[in-house]
Amino acid sequence: MTSEAIKVNLAGLSLSKMQTFFTDLAEKPFRASQVMRWIHQRGVTDIQQMTDISKVLRDKLDQVAEIKLPLIVDEFHSSDGSQKWIVEIASGSRVETVFIPEADRGTLCISSQAGCSLDCSFCATGKQGFNSNLSVAEIVGQLWWANYKLGGFDSGNERPISNVVMMGMGEPLLNFDNVMDAVNIMMDDLAYGLSKRKVTISTSGVVPAIRKLKDFTDASLAISLHAPNDELRSQIMPVNRKYPIHELLEAVEEYMDSLADKRVPVIEYTLIAGINDHRQHARDLAKLLATFPCKINLIPFNPFSMSDFKKPSNSSISNFRQILLQAGFTVTVRTTRGDDIAAACGQLVGEVNDTTRRSSRHKARSQVLSNGKAPGASENLAVPAETIV
Ligand code: SAH
Ligand code: SF4
Image 1: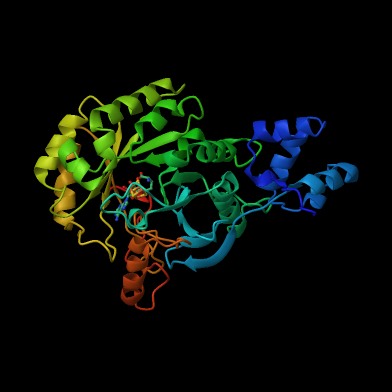
Image 2: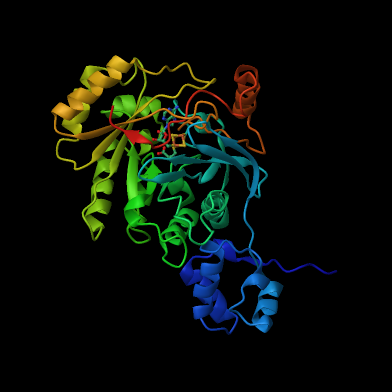
């Protein structure tokens, strides 16, 4: 019986793993730098096109390695320049990647898991349940594809993507090893060379993973807080029952202190009408964070079909913000964009292969409700186009 050996996917190797790969092949480790540049700076996926590598070595590589990216199965363009890609991963599930151009930057919002196990009550991804972790190549492949589609691999073009946020589908810190390798490839000068200040991991607060973060990366951090006390936070975010607020803030502070430069985390706070948007919540939040250096990003809740929650009125968003500003915080409010392509934070649903009951109910409803809009469509695009209103 013959079975074809499984090839190593070079698109998912960090520099150190690529160096080990070449050393194991009895080749010089500098080959790793060449291959990193070909894949991530020139967008080449055919080993035979790597012309500074000898034909003999290219043929040897072709025997044992490949460059395999996830598939793009659909794309949507918003009239405001935002774009969304539907990415099919090996498990057959589909996740979403969103690009938001602004005057001074281009931000890519990347998914780390198909579905999510943490079940936050305000999040469409959470309603699907967990399906699968993305591999390193599937995470970094979203950046590769967006860069390719936006002309970033063409020489002479300015780099279209300056910022990456792990704020798409899934909880990045529950796919720890793959996310670490992927962000380190994104920040590697031999690959995309993104600044550590411009690659942000967003987490709902998986404390043990935050505690070990400093040994693997120095990327920036955003914390999904969404409530000023444990009682309310545990109601809307089950993860808080395991890792309460004081433990979370302590772990974040420890991580920020470990960084070589001075940086503060972003506290994300999704404002949900009548749930966590009262003036008293703002005052309590100001008190909670009084001695915790951070920036606060308010995200007006983005509605979706499986949730009865509502977006607060503009005046209550403005009141909430005002209280925090008066308390001396830097506060941004996430703008709503691209309602014609449906890619809002918390609304990304993709499509899980092995559908749970939760997700099939959700899909049936959203198909009825989407009314000819894009698949998974709902209301707004509100990924991190931060604008002070
Ligand atoms: N799992 C990670 C990252 C993905 S969610 C996390 O929770 O941080 C990215 C951001 O979108 C989080 O701050 C999340 O709380 C927020 N979000 C989720 N659902 C939302 C919704 N319906 N409206 C607005 N923001 C939402
Ligand atoms: Fe998961 Fe983040 Fe959604 Fe919570 S908000 S369910 S952690 S993706």
